[in-house]
Length: 288
Picture (cartoon, rainbow, N blue to C red):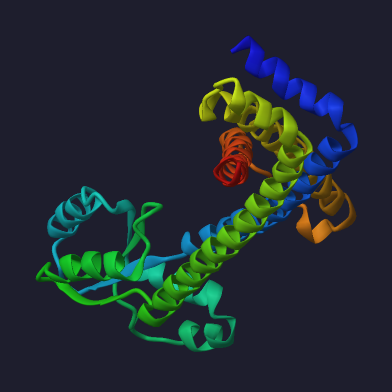
């Protein structure tokens, strides 16, 4: 193992310019993926803010006993998808309408009879705000005999689902494309290092060295380059994040990667470095 590490580190010393170029190229390839990842995370954060407004409103028949309403409220709150249930009586519903619907304030003030029904306002937990789940909860709530109507803005929730699906698909496609480009770049740089040491590899084969013994230093070199490139890409991404926040007040709510995201990014860099090395060294050994 010590020999493998020494040989991998010597490769940096033998070709410092090529090594620096490889690490920088890997870093900018991963930075492109990371930049898109930042956009995706912040888009997801914005969507969560919109999702938090998803709620089900169940309108209650007039004259329903308070005991039935209290029992139903407790039953609905026990649903695994439900975060909270608020009971809004007729007077509260009228007060809300007067406060929120300014254009109808005078009309509501002159009413002899309050036309607005009592209702349950049901908010769902994070992860249960897709159209199918909201519809399922609405159907269960509709099963209470004193519930007159249930509404949740079906079209709006379905549109939100489509936005989430498109954003996820675009993220996967672009991530795979950039990861493929990074593998090609790393593979090319490792291939150049392999060709530079072609005579040494040929001699090692003549004295009986196994393929895995020959591959070892190159695989470790690729992993180290991927790790260093990943660390550099995270540094550049963080600098870009700070620059955007400092120069755009509208972007002050931007969030950066969490520690486990950074860890995954570094592991991804190592994996890409190993992948490029395996492909390049394997192809060369087949030709020797």
